[in-house]
Structure formats: C-alpha cells, structure tokens
Image (cartoon, rainbow, N blue to C red; front, side):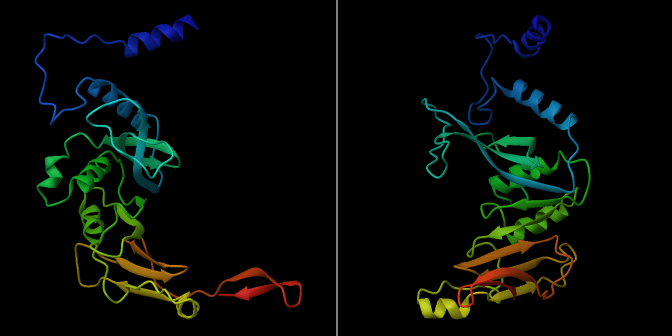
Length: 247
C-alpha cells in the first residue's frame, strides 16, 4: 500500500513555523489544527447527503493528559477529554464545532447562548430546508426551537426538555410525586399545549408524559395532536396467558 501511504502523507503532513506570530489563544485555541479540521469537515460534507431526520449531540475525544481546554467529564464512560457539538445523520458525523472555539458572533449578537450559537452554525452547513432535528435536554428550549425555524434552512427541532428555564407552558408542567399510591394514580397522565398566534413559529407543541417520572418534550415537527388507541401483548399472571392490552 505504498501509494496509499504516500497519499496520506501528502494530505496530512504539515510544518508549523515557530517564528510566526501566534494568534490570540482565547479566540483561536485550535489554530494549529484548524486546517486539518476544515479538511475533515469539507470531505465529510461532500461524501454525504443528510436525510430529513438529523440529530445534534455532543461528542468527546478522550484525553488523559493535561490541557487547559480539557473538560472534566464524569457522566460518560469515555472520561475527560475535548468536546464538540456534532451534527449527525444516520450515525454519520456530517459537521462539528469544538466547544473551546469561540461561538459565532453572528448568532450570539442575536441573544443566543454560545451553545445554541454553535448549533446554529452547524445548521448553516445543511443543503436543504425543513430537516427534523432530534436533541436531548441540554439543547432543547422554546426559544431555540423558534430560532432554528427562523434559520435560513428552517430546521424543525424536537426532543426532551428540562422542566425549568426552557419555556415550557405551565399547563403541561407535571411535578414528581413521591407517594407510591399517588404515583400509580398519576402514571400515564399526558398533557399537551400548542403555541398559537406566532407567525415566526407555527405549530410548536409542548407535551408532558408521566411514566416513572414526568418527562417533558418540545416538538416543532408535530403534524397533529390526537389520541390514538394502541395495543400490546401482556402476560397475565392470574390466568397464565398472554392477553391484548389497550392503552
């Protein structure tokens, strides 16, 4: 594979001149790797066409040494390392934005947080409109759903949301019940509300479902809100048979 090794060497070999003036590390902390990152982003976006369903989540590069930009990560098996926000499609990383890089001023000037500004910059790389983007509770909020829809590519955001500080209407909020008897009574409770009268954000829906705990959702991709009766097979211990249960 001499030809392949030569191509890899030619593409990725670089020389850094130590006499050049270093940029401000607070604004360009990854300046030594910027060209490599841009190369990865370019070929990743040329090699893939995103489907209608996409997702945004954090990705971690494990790192055990010392570095000022290494993040303390105790909630993932990978451990400490460098984190980036990544836009993915069907398991493929389409674009990424490292968290130690400065958030785009284009979006921070609009009042968005650095986290949401980085995600909006990821949406810039999409080639089509009306993608449906799933997210976890770190990202989702009513304000961000509206900002994503006002984006040039009109991204429809949906996902679980944290209960406080994310714009959930009081009509769908559910408090966690500690009493076991009361838990059985409230389990399965569903509440829904639709934002109406806002021309910049049509059809934003907030939903809460009480399972073992209350879970809250935002969705800008919801077509309609209705009750649907579904069935599933459940084993009944009393008669030792499998029965059809409606829910």
